Image (cartoon, rainbow, N blue to C red):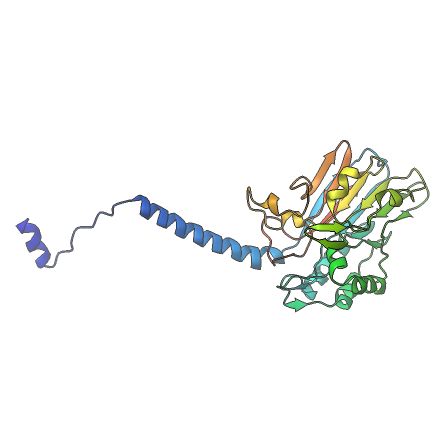
Length: 308
């Protein structure tokens, strides 16, 4: 004991202290790590992932699509034009990327403007429409409407699409292509068009009436904003294309299915789904809704090749 005291008084460094590892220390360290990870993840979700842009490609041979009738489709869904993440330069990049795919036809699946409280850099309808007017494909550009279009500025969105010379399909079917290689595009009215309160909605969708306009045996592609229609889609339709869900937008394990805006949960949240030989593709979309953040589902343009 005395030798130890004398050594310290002579200026020697004290022996290293032994840290006692306790449950409280472990939990405190874990909490700090989780807090740091959460902050870093939140920063990525808010500032980085929403600014990315990917092209997601699918090559399909649906049962009701002729194998020799190749068709490429570029899908733009849920633009939600407005800052902070879907500014006019970003929309310009989306259009340029879509055009570079050189698809046979381009479809727009609704929800064109950002309507949530965080949209701090509004993009007027006329501005995003001017950019969308630059889209070009041999069989044209075709649009449907989404629930946010109906809820916030349906007249403005209609005028904007008309000004951009993009035809709107609303419970309508159109026959496209050359003789012997024709196909139908059927555009469904929105399923959540009118809010009735207490989580209830009245749609204007008329699936039966829309498909009744299909007057030949040529294959059919159905455009619908919300994928919840899919269980009712008959085998006559080769492919259904949808948006609306944003792929969940914030895909946290075990949690995100509860936030997918669908009564079917995660069943039709994202990607390619096959049920009873019927095909569905749900785009993760481009913009954001409710909050300006994305995690695990980057903004995407979908590129589909049928008869691949």
